Image (cartoon, rainbow, N blue to C red; front, side, top):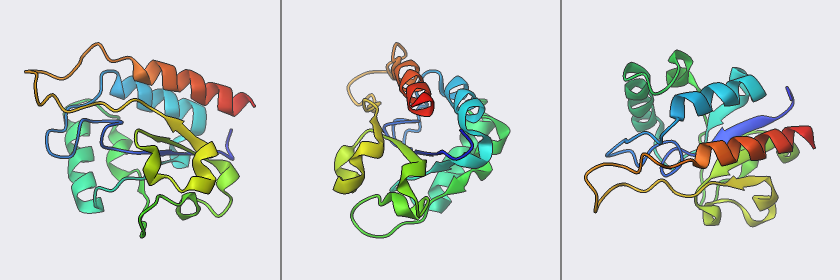
Length: 149
């Protein structure tokens, strides 16, 4: 368990997007469960959103009680290139699990380290986000299976 690192995407995974910032239902519980599974120090954010904007979003999520206090200072992964190369997280990619909604961003040779989550869309055609979304529960089960294997 302590050897695994969990990389989380932001937009479409934890929130709708960095503009509307609607948190996915169960966000606090999901982050807390991930902390229990991986340890706070083994969780990071791997997103296309720049770090300054991410910190603003994270601070707001904490202030609004959608994320635990430590989330605003979570490790942020800087990266370059068109793909999320898990070597930016750790040289040994076998130690990294990434949760992302957009597989084309993940380097082809590393997709076996991906747990795909269905995108949490911004409610462009609705008045409120989909509060019946249960993707976090499904992903937590998959994360537990990965840890056990």
